[in-house]
Image 1 (cartoon, helix red, strand yellow):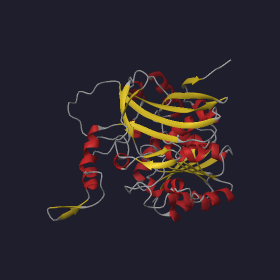
Image 2 (cartoon, one colour):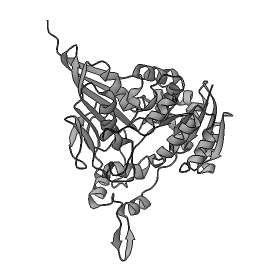
Image 3 (cartoon, helix red, strand yellow):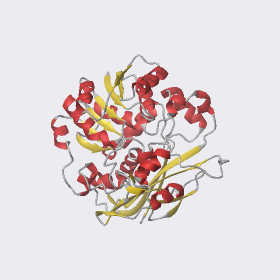
Image 4 (cartoon, one colour):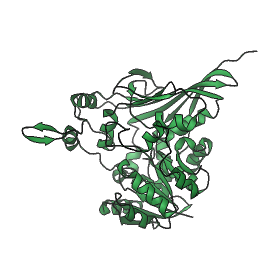
Length: 420
């Protein structure tokens, strides 16, 4: 039976706690958040005796280390600014570490400050990798949906290839019901800061065996997702996959990119300079444009606290798909291999309801991969050291998701040369 320290009781922390509480392999969950009232609300909604709540400032390593003593794994669902503090505390406490996003979140140039992404790009040793290996433990980075499920799918395909030349990830969705609003505000469904940052930073593409930066919103492509999503305008987007996949997959890869839907509204803000953290003078007052925008943006509601069966039974109002395309060779012949998968694994209202009844939540796209990753680390089914989700066994990952109550169904298309 495992003991878990879960840091963060927000939009993903609640679903993660619900999944863990219903897991027979988990005996205790310590839910830590700087907002103790929020943690208590999450615990009350789940109603499990496994959960205890603690006030926790994730910026203070000693606080994290205190709560991490005696646990088997620490799942970090806070902002990436706290990753290193929590990762260090988990190591010193003898616990595996799992997060769902990683890298430098507050600089316009991801190489400007030492972090995991810059270490990969510059081919330097990864921080704490040696220490985690020597301790026989794992630090699993980016095990949510994207990064996370996207990386596992890429590994699933690459395992079938002799040689990998290109990996292309396309992530997009569409509302299944048209909004009646003529003019809409920008209302990101996750951290507004992180969402704005992703659009503001020049995206990294692995090209010709090296990492290159491209202008924001470059590489536009009308991508034909399967129905009911259909064509969606995508462009290069700053994300972890094009950085970590070439590092961990290898196999001769020469190209890797990630494309995400073009948001014309936030794009206009960014083009006007509202993504910049650099202060400007406004009537004698110094203010960062980014701070102004983030002050005005409505923060997303905690969907987990508002989630109920009646809402889950309503028709799906949106479907988001992940497509991973890989080119390379199979049996020494040129081949293309693509996989399509819903970001939450379910495609229908009935499938969503089934997930909800099994896990106590249908908000599983990020939380479920994190729990699966933690279980694989604890069970000894992961490499040791600092790794990313593409280092996990994809077949085991998908089977665990299905066994836990979220059946994985993917669509594969393989095109390869066959000669006789």
